[in-house]
Each structure stands twice: as structure tokens, then as C-alpha cells.
Length: 185
Image (cartoon, rainbow, N blue to C red; front, side):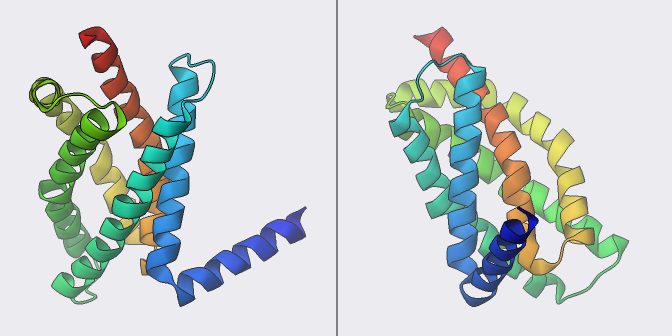
């Protein structure tokens, strides 16, 4: 079994090297789908809602993976390959003040409008009500992840690491969004 895993890992690394954007997009999509399947099961769904799962795969593939790819390239340009605790702290702070709020609000809007098919007024009210709590939770959780990512992860693994941890965060967001939607219905 370990030979199969080793070969799969080597193949993955080769694809990551040859086609980084595509590989990160596919990885983010797969992880988004897995997190949604887990969130559905945790919330008590008997039969997986395939449409919802596929829409979240699409979100990971079309947005999360590419966004992370370009974010980390931009961070490296801004900080010109500098390392050290001060640089890592600046990267984490910049990420938390820019992409974290954007990503959370975008996910909430996408989930409400596209995944659940709710009206703009319902989605806007839900965002207005829940966004501050979600963002505060993000600011308690994501700086640690960002620190590990920028301090210890090689550049080519940052999006993958972020996507993996993000799949756990997405379970939280997914359950939070769904709980509110069910209560509002």
C-alpha cells in the first residue's frame, strides 16, 4: 500500500510542478467537496445533496485554489522572498486584514445565493447578522494557520496546506450558514 501512496504523491508533486495553478485548483475543489460531504453528514443529512456538494467543489476549484495561488505569489512579490519572524508577522497581518474578511463574506454570499438559492435580501440580512461573529472566529483561528504556513511551508505547498485547513474551516462555515438558513426558513 505504501508504494501506491508514494507513487501517487510523486505524481501529485510532478503535476504541482508542471501545472501549479491547475493542480491547486483541483486540490481546493476536491477538499471543498470533502468538507461539504462531512458537513452534510454532521448536520444529519441521510442522503448527500449532490447539487450542493458540486457547487462547493466548483467554488473551491474556480475561486479558492486560484485565489490562494495568486495570493501567495503576490505575498512573495511584496516581501521579495524575505524571511524571519517580522516578515512572517507582516504577511499574516496583511492576509488577515485583506483576504480573510473578503473570503468569508464572499463564501457567505456564494453559499446563500448560489448553493441555497436564497434571495439577495435574505442573504444580505444573514451576512449582516452572522458575518461579525464569523470574522471574529476567523481572526482567532487563521493567524495561527497563517503563521505555520508562512514560517514552515515551502511556497509550492502553501495553497495545499491552506486548502486542507480551509476544508475544516469550511465545515464550520457550512454548518453555520446552514443552521442560520434552516432557522430562517
